[in-house]
Image (tube, rainbow, N blue to C red; front, side):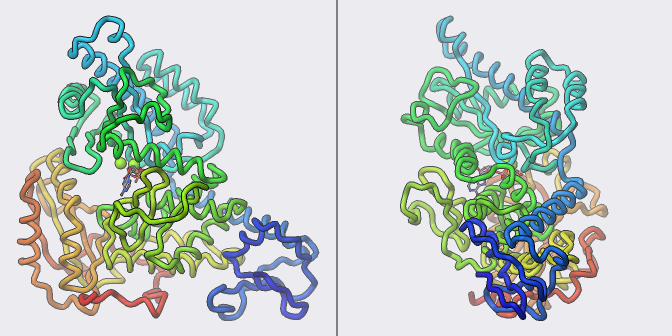
Length: 571
Ligand SMILES: Nc1ncnc2c1ncn2[C@@H]1O[C@H](COP(=O)(O)OP(=O)(O)OP(=O)(O)O)[C@@H](O)[C@H]1O
Ligand SMILES: [Mg+2]
Ligand SMILES: [Mg+2]
C-alpha cells in the first residue's frame, strides 16, 4: 500500500498502484516535501528512491496525478510501437482481408462441389454452405481495426478488384479504420477455421477435394497437409500470406457464413477432432468476453508479443510462449487491473509473473467454475488454462531451460518497468534484442537444407515439430541450452537453407560430442519429409552478423537474479 510521511514523501509500490485505483482508493493529497519515491514491494526501497519531478503538482490529487503520468507513459509506448514499423500497413491489411474473402469464396465453391458429389437434391444443393472463421492473433484483432487509411483502403479494393463481394466487404469495413489496435503483425499467419456440414468429411472432402482445389489456384502456393497433429490442418500461402486452415465438421446440413459457434445447437454430437479444431475460435471468443477493455488488451498483447520476440522467448515449438499463451497471460492481467492504463498493465504484467509461484496455473476468471486443474492434460512447468470448455491447458513444449529463460526475462522486465514513471525511463530497453553472442560462448548450429524452397518449408516444419526432443537431449548433456527461435540463412551453403543457433551453458560447453546427439535426433525424423541436416558446435564469433547484436545497456546485465542459477544436468 502507499504510505505517506510528511518528512519522507510518499512511497508507492508501483505495480500495486492499479490495485489502489481499482479499489477506488480515496484521493490522497500530496503535502509539500520530497516527491514520490518508488519502492519494490518485495524487497523494500531499491537503492536511493528515484524521484518523479512532480513540481508544482503537489496539490493535485494522488489519483489524478497517477492517471496522468500513466497516460503519458502509455502514449509514449504506443508511439514507440508505431515507430518500430511492425504494424501492418493499410495495404497489407487490405491484402489480408482480400485473401480471407478469396478463401471464403473457394470454400463456398468447394462445399457446392461436395454437395453435388454427394448427390444432394436441388434444394439442399442450393442451401449447402460452409463458413470460414478467423481466430488466433488475427481473430483477436478483428473486432477493432487500427489504421486511419480509409482512402488507401478503398483505393486498394479497386486495385484488387476481385468482384463486387470483395469490394462490398472493403467498403463496409472502411468505417472501422479509426485509430484502434490490431494484435497480429506483418509476420503473423492468418488462422482460419473451415466449418463444414455433416456431409463434408475431413479425410476425403477436406484433405483431398479442397486440397486439390487449392493447389489448382495460381494465387495459392506451398500447400501442406498436416494430418497427424492434434489439430489437423492445411497450411498454405494465398497471395503470399501464410494461412493455417483446420477443419471442423458440424452435424447440420448447412453452416451459415456467420455461424455462432458458441450456440449449443451447432455443437451437438460433434467428433473429438472437430471439437479440438473449434477450441481456437472458442478460446478467442471467451478471451474477448472476459476482458474488461478490448482495446487496452489488444495494445498490451501487441507489446508483450514484441517483447517476447525480441527477447527470444516466443515460439511454442521451441519451448517458449505461443500467441495463445501470451493472450491468456495478458487477459489475466487485464482482468486483475480493470482500470489500469497500458503502461500500468505492462508494469503489472512483469511484476506479477516475475514473482508467480509456478507451477500454480494461470486461470482466467469466468465467474463459473471453482478454480481447479484439469485432469486431462499433464501439468507443464508454466500451466496456462484455456478459457473455454473442456478447460484444458494450453499445449506447451516448455523445458527446464526455456522455463529458466522465461523467468529471467520476466525478472528483467520487472526490473526495468517497476519504476517506469521515472523521467529518464525509455521503452527501448525493454524491447532490446537478446544479445546471444554476448551471453554464450558456444552454440549448436543446426543447418537444414533442401533442393528447393518448397521442400525446405516442409522439411523445416517437420524438424521444428521434433525440436523438443533435441533440446531435452542437449539439456541432459549440458544442463542448459537456449534454443534461439530466430531462423537464419547461411549464405555459404548453396542450397536453400534455414539455420538455428542454440546457446550452450557458458560453464559447461567446452566439450560436446555432437555426433551421437545428431544420430539420435535423425532417427526421430525418419517418418516424415526428407531433407539434409547438419549439427555442429560453433563459437560465438562464427555467428552471422545479424545474430551478433550487442547494445550498451545489455552490458553488465548477465543474471538479474542472483538466486536464479542455470539449471543443471541433474535437474
Ligand atoms: N499450444 C497451444 N495450445 C492451445 N491452443 C493453441 C496452441 N497453439 C495454438 N493454439 C490455437 O491456435 C491459434 C493460432 O495459433 P498460432 O500459433 O498461429 O498463434 P497466434 O496467436 O495466431 O500468434 P501468431 O501471431 O504468432 O500467429 C491460437 O490462438 C490458439 O487458439
Ligand atoms: Mg497465428
Ligand atoms: Mg497459426
